[in-house]
Length: 121
Image (tube, rainbow, N blue to C red; front, side, top):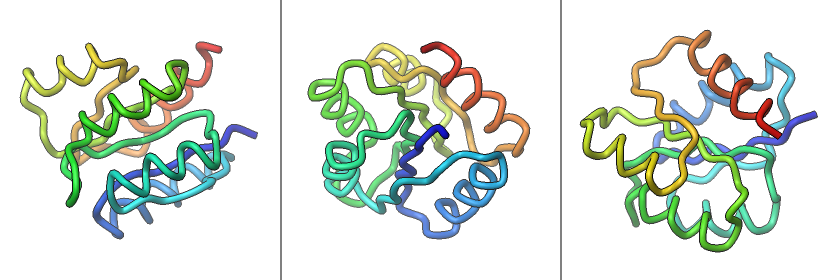
């Protein structure tokens, strides 16, 4: 079973993602409301995939992405954010995000992107 870490400052968003991913058969190994917790949990839980928000209370998602990639270069990360500016999307992809989903999103879109990302092993 593929293991996923969800990073989003919104409890509602984390719950929504957790429910759709759990229903699809994924295991949620942790939820992080901020960048610091995200980095700690990614080290501790070694998930197969991380969903990461760009706007976090203590850090930007792009900084967290760089931190995760510095420690775990092979970690698969998908950005899920309301911020859809092209410059941010491009930066995230340059820093190693596999994909970028803009909120609001459909369940089909999330599951398609997650399944695609996890196939590339």
